[in-house]
Length: 323
Image (cartoon, rainbow, N blue to C red; front, side):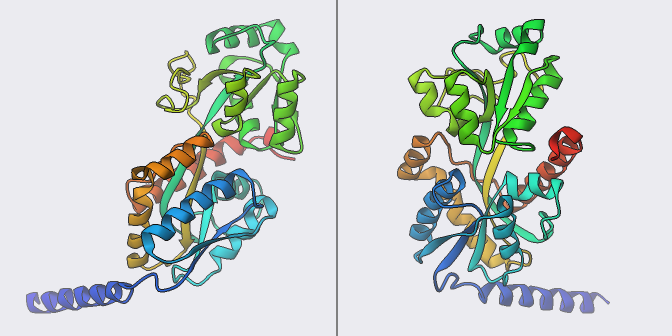
C-alpha cells in the first residue's frame, strides 16, 4: 500500500510538473485584455496603464479591447466564455463582478466563471460637499444632516444602484440622516450639479473629485477606507472622523476565464505584483487620483472577490437600489 501511495504521489508530481512546464514559455504572442466599458472612461484609463506595464514585464504586446454595454456585462461574459489559454483576459471591476450580477441576470457567475489573478487598483469612496454646505468636517456634516435642516439637503449619484447611490443610502442609515437621493444618467452629470451647487453631497470614488478638490469647487470630508490616502493625506478616514464601519470603494483587477492554467496565473500575477514598484506606473496612477494595490496572492484576490460579491448582495437586497 505504501509503495502504491508513493507511486501515485510520484505520478501526480510528474503530471503537475508536465502541466506547469507546458506553459513555461507563456506568453508566446499578444495578450488581449477586454475592458468592458467604453474607451476614455475610468476603467479604460486604469486598464491601459496596467496593460503597458504588463507588456514591458512579459515581453509581449498586451492590447486593450473595449467591449462596452450592459453595464460591463457584455465584455465580462465574452471573457467568461473564452478559451482558458491566457490570451483573453478581463479587467474586471466592482460593477462587473459585484453590483450587476446582484441586480440582474448577466449571463455569467462572477465567481465561478473566472480565474482571479490580482487586483490592480482599489479606489475608496470619498465623501464631499459643495462649499455652500455649512460644514467643514465630517463630524459637522453628520451633525447637520441628522437635523431638520438635513431633510432639505440631497446627495447626487450617477444612477440607481451605483456606488455613489449605495454609499449615500448607507450614510443615511448610519448617521440617521434623510438626504434625498437625486439620480442622474451618469456620474459626470451628478458631479456637474454638485459643483454648480444644485446638489449638496456626493459620495463616490476619489478620482472623480480630485481636480475639484484642488480647485476648491468641492470640500473633502473623509475617505471611506481603513487608511488615509497618500494622494490626500490631510483627509481623515471615516473612522477617524467618527463614522465607524463605513469602508467602501471599487476595485479593478485582472481576471481570466475559469480553468486558467496555474503556470499562466503565476506568470501574470508576478507581472502584476510589480505595479507598485515602478515609479512611472505609480506616477501615472497618482495623476488620476489612484494608487496601485496588487493582491498578496491569486487566492487572496479570489477570496476578496467572493467576499465583496456577498457584501454587495446583502447591501443591494433593498428595493431602493433597484429600478
